[in-house]
Amino acid sequence: MTGRVETAGGRGYELPALLEWRLRRTGGVPCDSFRAKCLYRADMGETLKTACRFTATENGATAFHGVIDEWSAVCGAEGTVLTIEGRGMAALLLDNEAEAVTYQRASADEILREHAAACGVRWELHGAARGAGEYRVASGASRWKAIEGFARRCGLTPYFTREGVLSLRGAETGRRHTLAEPAGLLEASYRDRRYGVLSEVTAVNRSKKLRQSVRNEEFIARGGCCRRVVYVPSRSINELRYTGRYQIERSAEDARELVIVLAGRADIEPLDRVELVIARLGVRGSFRVSELLHTICARGETTELTLWEV
Image (cartoon, rainbow, N blue to C red; front, top):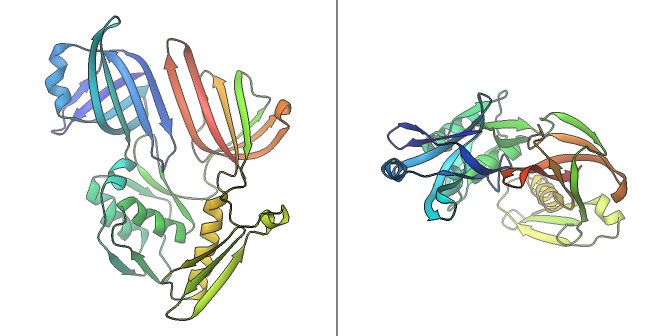
């Protein structure tokens, strides 16, 4: 893998051969991140002071593109080593606050022009998406929150590609893989979390005297009991129902989590679906890739996958 930095003025600079790296991909929030190390030369300092983007390339294809948060040069027993760290392009949306605004039947293209383009983030749309009814961006919300909230209402998921492009995708988007007793399995852990999973959400609009309850029947059948009441300015029963369903889905996203560590590199991305069998843990089922961590260092190359049961 090779690394390249780009300055605020648009100049590119190829880094010396990378000694080690960690690429964490989520596609969303918490956002992608990276750390890369290479040998440092004194003449690199002035360029690095204005460096703001990092791109990792492997076999001619972009493996990561993101924002440089910091760099450091250390002179020690291993020589003089440069370390560069940063996050994916979602960082620009998370770090910038949106103004409070109310949209009347806004389209996805309008939302992206308003919030993504303002931060210099490229995007791609898979079909047209238009919100039903009024959509509000609250005061103090990040530009990421403004985009994510609209996308979720349209049944879409905001996702950043390896190239740093924001894509709005359907829930079923992603490749499918089958891993039955995966080769090169170094470690696996399975967790079933109940704390924090909601059994029922009641959404209330006091001014219009509207209320709507949504139940998590699957969790209730397992003996779960955790009710929440949320007060929101939604204008209809349908919007209240969406709020309750959204709260329940978010609370249960990582309730059943499997983490596996594989030797080498796995050609898998966030949002991919994996049919997995690990007999020693008694695990057999369908999982969605939430996060992957690709690491290479003196100890070797590994891929860690965090998967949520679906």
